[in-house]
Every structure is written in structure tokens, then in C-alpha cells.
Length: 474
Image (cartoon, rainbow, N blue to C red; front, side, top):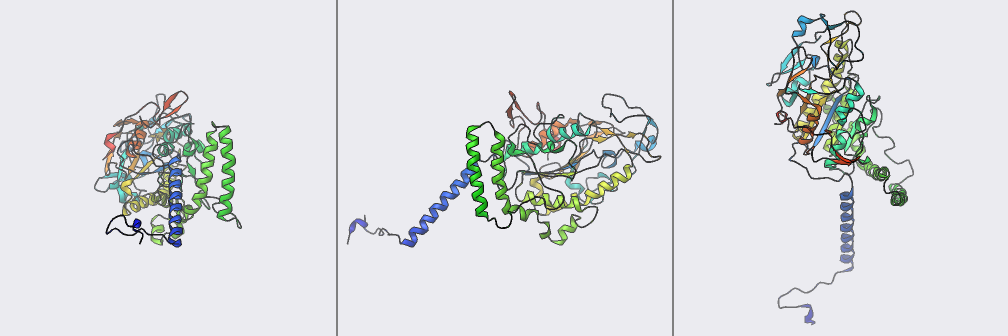
């Protein structure tokens, strides 16, 4: 016996592996190498997960943008004083005057009755039938102000922190700061209307951040993503080979032109699109949802189908790890016929939004998901008389209502107040930059640390700093 195989008494003999064991071990080693390589590639990805800068209360954000400026006076901030002032002449003063202002103007009362709901006693106008049922999950904020009376500039400021466009959107900043927990889906997804909002796609652009962080819009009609699957006859292996060839050519170009960040982002997008083919079909297929869920969101009903699909898709996206999802509902710019216009608009979004809150809550996702509802500004208590006895409202950057749910906000509270006519915020008044700073804080980001060096200085979402609105945080 060769005792060299037994270094000490009682020790086990060295085992000579069989051919099968050798091949199995080789496969395991290759698998480990492949996994290590994949993890390294993810770590190099611009969307790789990053640590929080401050303790987070939320992991994801669903941002509900009511483009056009919903009227706080006719939604969530009742003004009984307008009953006595109705049709009395009103003269506007100050710099914040709309270019559309002309002729005689009159106070306009709300056409809707208001009631309090939930244990919190939240005020809502009568068209909000479904949202009233989840009133205690909502934190209403009446103190926000912006700087513009014009839609495009106000939209840019609400979405990007800058009235003049060209800066990164809030979702882009969040993706830049936190990355994405799912490398097979975009970190920032946008669900727009068929007609893009005023200001266009710059509302979800990357600005001066690398192009990897721009929002990815999904189509509102038909398949949300075109050409998701390769054409007949093209196998995944064939597609992979084509991408590998394209990558080699692009990498050579990157080496020769290292300052072309857009090309690097395009290469990453090609790879992301390839990976999305595995997950996106399941995510966007709403028909696999049970009938009760689709009914809850109002899918199949004429008024609520479109926005109901967006809200259900938003829930599915955050379930899959998408960090920031923004939904658009347009045409809230009700300069006349406000009873009909706002009444119809509220009915289109009321049931889907209430379902989104309830659905996230029953799945245990609401506490980790911050929901934001707002427009780009509020409305005035006055307007010109149009069409006889049909009334509307003008733009108002000094008073608006926005609300939050989930994600560490103070549910069941109303924070701030406007004056007795709804013209200007008078309690807990904050510029929109402070709202942005607060949203970042809830998601685990510090506006003063979340910076990007551009044009000779470090830039941030708030432009030049802001303060957290502590009263909004539970």
C-alpha cells in the first residue's frame, strides 16, 4: 500500500475523481466564472444598485402628474367664502398674472359640494367617490408654490426643478442616485398620454446626466413596447451574435472618441433591450391579471380604462423593481366649463388611483412605495365669464394642493393652508424645491450630496439647495 496517500493514521484516503465528477466540477467552475463575470458587469453598469445616502422610508416612487393644473378649490381645498363672492368683480394685482387675463373678471364658486372623509376628516369634492375610501392613507399638502404661470415652464420646474428645461428630471436624479434593483428593466419608466405634455419629452429627460438615466416612455395605445420580440426566423442566439458584433464596433468607436457619452448609453440600451425581452412581456401583459383586479382598477369601463391600465402597470413595474414610474393624465387646464371638465377628469382617474393605493397596501408594498399626486400649479378663485353662466379658472402658481401616500409620509393629515379664497398659500409655505428635497429624502437621498459636476460647478436637483419639509414625514 502506498502510505503517501495516508499522511496520518486514521485519515481518509485521497479521492481520485471520476471522469463524470471532473466534467461536473468543470461545469461548476465555468458557471462560477460566468456568474462572477455577470456580477462584475452589473457592478459596472450605470444603473447598478447604489447605497442610500440617508436612511430611506421608500424604495420606489409612483408619480401621478395631472398635466394642466388641477383646481385645488374644486378638488381638495373647499372655499365657502366664494359662495358669497360668486360673480362679484375681482381685480388681479401683482406680477404673477396670466397672459390670457383680459376683460372683467369675477369670483367663481365651486360647482361641487365638499364632504369630509375617513377618521382624518380629509376634504374632497363630490366627484372623488373612490379616493374618499382611502382618505386615511393620504397626506394632503396645501403649501406648495412655484414660479411660473405658463404650462411648459411650470411643468419643467415641477418635473426637473428648473423652469427653462434641459435639466435632469426627478426620476433621472433618483436613478442616478440609487440605480436600479432590476438590471433587466429601466430604472425610470414613463406612461404618457398619446399627446406628450407641454414641454415634451424633456419632462423626463436626463439633462446633463449621462443618457442612461433618462426616462423610458411606454406607448399608451397598443403594445407598450414596439418590436419587443425579434422577427420570425431570428433566434436569440442570432440576435446575441449581432449585438456582440455591434458592441465590438461601438467599443472601437468609443476608444477613438471617449467623450461621446451618448454612444456608451446607446450600447447599454441595446443590451438592456435584449434583456428586457425576458421580463417585459410578462410585466405588460395585463390580461393575466384576475378579473377582480381589473375590475377594481376600472379596466373595461370607458371612462377609467386608459388610466386604470396605467395604474395597474405601475404596480406591476414597482413589483419588478423599477425605481421610478411617472404617469400622465392631461387636459386639466379648465378655463371654462369647470363642472363638466373637472368632473369628467376626476372620474377618469378617481377609481384607478384609489385602486392603486388599496392594491399596493394589500400586497404589503405601500409602505415601500411613495405615491405623489400633483399638477404643475393650482387655479385662481376667479375667471372671466365665458359662455353665459359657464365658469372656469385661470393659472395660479401661489396656491395648489398636492398629496402623497405610502413611503413614510404622514398619512391621514392635511398640512398647510391657503387663504379664505384659495388665492395664496399662507401656512407651511414652501417652494417646490423643498418638496423635491423631501421626496429625495424619503427615497434615501440627500440633495446636498446628490450632485453632478457640469459646466464648471456641482449641480443638484434643487438648483441651489432646499430644506426638508419635516411635517410631511411620519
